[in-house]
Amino acid sequence: MYICADTYDDEPTFRAYARETVNRHRQFKMDPVLWSAFWTVFTNFLKSRGTVTPQQEQAWMQLGKTFDEECQSHLKALGLPHV
Image (cartoon, rainbow, N blue to C red):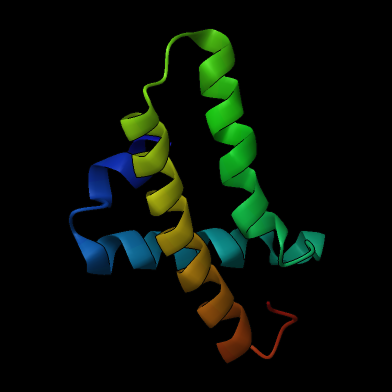
């Protein structure tokens, strides 16, 4: 997750990482909704480990939304199921 947080301000790199993540997970034929659902699971995990402010949660969810948008766009470009 560090790479997502560290590259978020460098949009081309962040989006390239999202596409590469899709490429590495293609073999698992994941349901496209999981790219978005992951971020809810992740923020709940963070909450279970300590305090997460509403602002931090909102920031992670915004990052996840951008990540999901790029994943869905890449899936569509590859001709794979997408949301």
